[in-house]
Image (cartoon, rainbow, N blue to C red; front, side, top):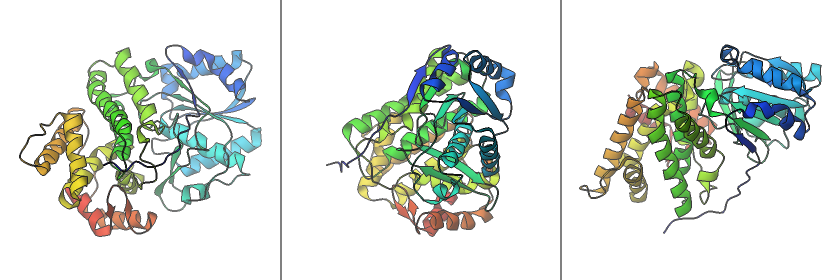
Length: 399
């Protein structure tokens, strides 16, 4: 029998989906009370694609005043968020528009958290619960992090520790709207597309591998896994396939807005994310690539050390998502074959599957493991409770 937990679900964000939806930007900002916007974006790809000009035109024609913060990196920096806070204070902004990937939207959230609390925000990344956030709007240009509807945000602390910190407060940190046009993702390089697919997969992965479950929640998870499994290769071979781009964009959003987590709240989850954060914050590789390495290694560790029911969960993943025959010799064989097929699929997307491919040396394992347990009360907060020795073993399984 499944252990079905209590849960809260609050789909706060208004989604405007489809071709040309950017044109409605000014109306949405006004709908949610914005009068002066801080427009946050990345390294300039939106200028090359023409999206920047479209946004500026929509804001100007809609009579919405705005100021800008560019230069957000793929692993978003605390220092850039603080620069944005200074701009927001000086200019008196009351709305925060993130245009780009999850790093841009996360940065906009950090600034909006600070502006709602008199400048305080960093304590929230260290466990203090925020009470409010000024309104954030999102236009995502990559199917990946799902920050456009999630209640989470991540920053790299380049000011004090050089470590990556995340927070998840769904009642506070969701954008008020998300404009989602699949055509905005056509120009993405294949590496970013593939990394995004792994990121989408991971947000369902963290909800599927818990000690709580529900039949409907499992069905949502498996359907999301299969959507990414089917459409990521299509997008890589046909970048302007609208259907495939649309399916991936929707999968990214609904993978991380808690729909796939129904019936399984209250369980420590996301161990693979905790592991990955201890590495990419230092080595500055894409988040999705780090997750592509850590997810299979985490499953291998479960098969070696998990309970019978935990190993069976890995086997179910192989059967339901990667079409492993359930009648193989035993549950361990089923689980192991599922992991092998998972790795093969990740490789087919051009993703790394070992720490060596990411440039992480073995000498880093012990330090990263200690950082991980110190952030999580002495154990890894995933499907299995794992101490520093176990984390080092997971890293070795990723070699």
